[in-house]
Length: 77
Image 1 (tube, rainbow, N blue to C red):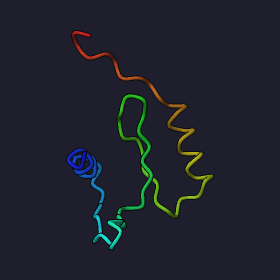
Image 2: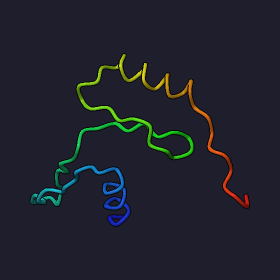
Image 3: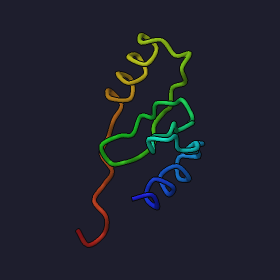
Image 4: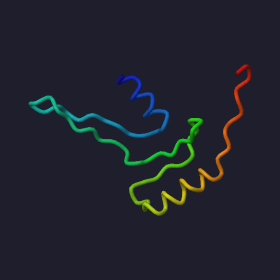
């Protein structure tokens, strides 16, 4: 929903703005240009801008994968 998109953008502190609609009802969305790495537990681990090379991203992702330890279960689960 639009509300969920706004909440996600706020949580990740990214910019997003829908531009004006054209005659066909189409529009362009202006937004931050970042790729986020989130682990299997939903924890933010890193982000990569458009200047990051594929090799840099691959090294970072591999390092996070190699060091990953799952969060302990929440109390009562």
